[in-house]
Length: 537
Image (tube, one colour):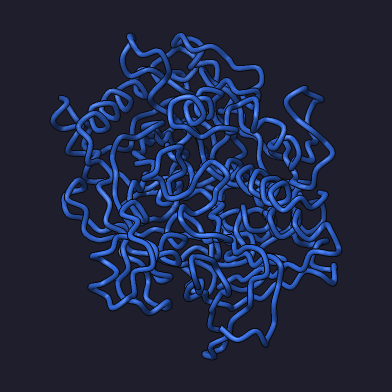
């Protein structure tokens, strides 16, 4: 790599939830030059700010990676469509805006059992708080001093309180503050909105930062690889408008391209399973068998119930939508601000479990899973996930070409324990809906259809219809062992000047949606980068 050409102290690959945080924090010091490379476009339009507008981006190849998995034997050979945000803000620009951190035990497990020193709950809680501009009731677990809008939703359906009451009748406790490291029970959700507008990572962390002269944000930049000489990163090579380009790295390159793309960047750089890279003609810089492996994702199984109260899916009609759009433009309220999950409940599929193994997400926008169209009748939906799945998969390269999408080879329900837990969890959903509070509103169960009669039929129904939770993690696993991809300071093992910072470093899936944890990873990474460089924050 020539010493001529553009250079930066820090080059960040990927402008998603973690990458936006890194770009903001590292460029706070005017003496540090930062470049952020994002494959997709910006996300500053009206539809990106309107909470419901993110749905318009799903399936749009300009703004969605539109991944397709390999046929999955654990799903009867079905391939699955995996959306992933391809714009500034990444998943936070298209997701359901659910704000949840996970349980204290998630992070304590990372620190105490998996060698991830510095990642316990007590270590990461201040970082969750650092990001937040919280507009709910004052709480010790929240902060109003950050830039990420976190708030109760502006519109909450009356049946949400009914669902919470039914869970309490079932024996669950109502959790007063689920952001304080305790998710064992039922609670109503907070969301990443502020003033009725989506608070994506781009809006929260980049809008103001992009005015700094020491931060360059390059969109439409597909990163090929990092260039490594004598064990140290020297440059990041990318393509923009069909032309090859590179930026010299004075201090570090930080890969924040997400759990599906970060391992691909490492592999194209010669860091990954040696045999796989050699077969594709990629020079092996360091044989790292775990790059791309350990993929974890929330398998999601839906139960749908017809109810006696009007729900959001009935409002998906032209005249209603026109009225609601006008309401939103005037007041930032109404249907355009709803979130897909208004309450969650964590249940034990077996009474002997110390911690709940099933996560239930309750929403009022029910779709016919065959047609993908909103149900014509009033209906609510519960998505059941195994909170911390045992099933695993891997990411591989299709070729050395950075424009080729990765191979996603997953077994979403490859673990017998996962499928057994989901069967029990799906039956528990029926039991919750039979509680007095909810039963008085239930007309009939719409899905699964036909209703399974025994465990074998439940398993068949789950394998035939389960989808993803949009929470892939762990493909660049962090750990205290030499086999891990990154160490607890997120440094790629054996390579100087290279880190990974996004959901791919999470060693085990937190029992939660992953946007807030990914933002926390960005905060933690920025803190460590500045500490290691001895640069004042």
